[in-house]
Length: 154
Image 1 (cartoon, rainbow, N blue to C red):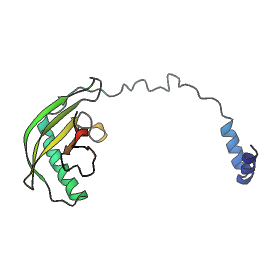
Image 2 (image 1 turned 90 degrees about the horizontal axis):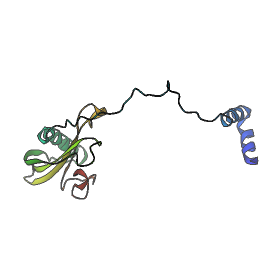
Image 3 (image 1 turned 135 degrees about the horizontal axis):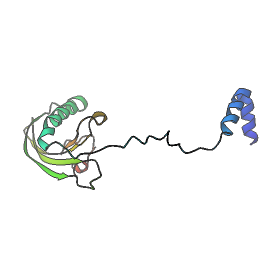
Image 4 (image 1 turned 180 degrees about the horizontal axis):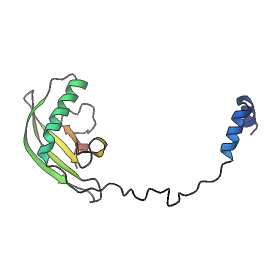
């Protein structure tokens, strides 16, 4: 306690007064009905998630951008094969609706690799559109979905 008053002396009388006013404040009160945001009902999910094929141009663009920008690699996705849905809303129905898909991606180096992705309702920028999260097996260089893109699957 003595150290507190000594440090208050060093700070000056003005700072000590401000500290005293803040310390002697009243207790917190619950919000009254007019202060509540009772008209905000929260997100309403309809379950309208695009089919798997709609995400392919987004994945191709983002894959090329990531490889060129961060890994200085000329790899691009040149085509897809066997794209199919693996799960839709695999958890409880109150969660954000997601469609999980998988397939094969042909890369510019001639190799076929498995691609796993999900389309998320209201998962885009600021919830204004559907978002896509994806992973190409063997090219998850920053280990965001490792091991073997497991985090990108249901």
